Amino acid sequence: MISFTDMKGKSSNLTKQNFFLKENEKRALVALGYTQIKQANYKSSLVIFECINNLFPNEVEIYKYLAFLYMETGYYEKSIRASQTYMEWAEESSKNTPIMFIKSLSLWELGLRKEASEIMQRYMATKNIL
Image (cartoon, rainbow, N blue to C red):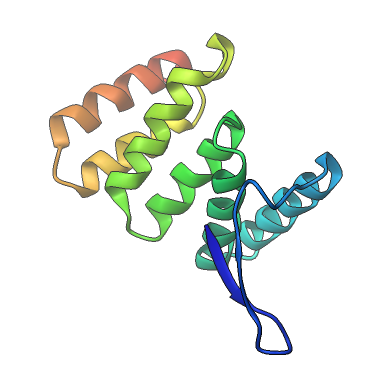
């Protein structure tokens, strides 16, 4: 549920039941969030993508953005969870994307060096770096 106050001071609550976005409106929010990422406004972008995720929790691609944004804002556990969700739900061809790199960096920041190294090695192997 999202709470807000309108310009007249009236308080309201938005829930999935009384709020609906059209597909083009959802795409516009994703574009806005992506623009914020490109401008390195990670906290603003995180708010946008969390709202999108609350409204569309089964939208796989949103987890990729969330993983990156959580990592950039220091929420490493959340980054790992978002990375894992993306890797579990994404099509097989998408699983060897930079999401592995993001997960590895978050694990490293949490001091989980062995796990981070293993994932990084798998990622690099998929890119023929090793």
